[in-house]
Length: 180
Ligand code: PRP
Image (cartoon, rainbow, N blue to C red; front, top):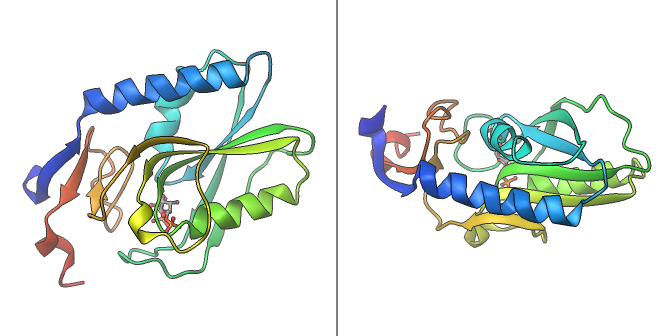
């Protein structure tokens, strides 16, 4: 697996430090509140697990499984809900947790959708932000790192469902995906 990685973009240590900083900010912003943390599967599962363990809040977690890439490297443009939330969001403070903000179509769609459920507030948190590929007008309230327009995998991010288990974020060698 490691042979498929061109170089390490963000080490496990760098990620851990930044996740702690984001958690500290959320702890401060939501002091005394009980937010619902919404993990957008599958990509956010590792970030979510690390982030919530650093939150000193009586938060609730729930999971939404959406997909728009369908094993391709470019978004299909259509966001498909594979699994919806179980928790009622009405009157609640919601934080959507994503692994990456790329075209922005997923987060834009999710924010609009979850707003219709009348939460008290919605904020968004994305570990990575790739502004070069943005199509939808959306920004995240909490961002870990801005990344270049390279194919990044690891720490939850995949290529064709692989590489999610890498403990760091790396750039995939182009020959792995260029014959797609
Ligand atoms: C990835 C990622 C985000 C979304 C971001 O999900 O996890 O949810 O794409 O891209 P966008 O800003 O262009 O919409 P994907 O559909 O690949 O599913 P996954 O989470 O299962 O990897």
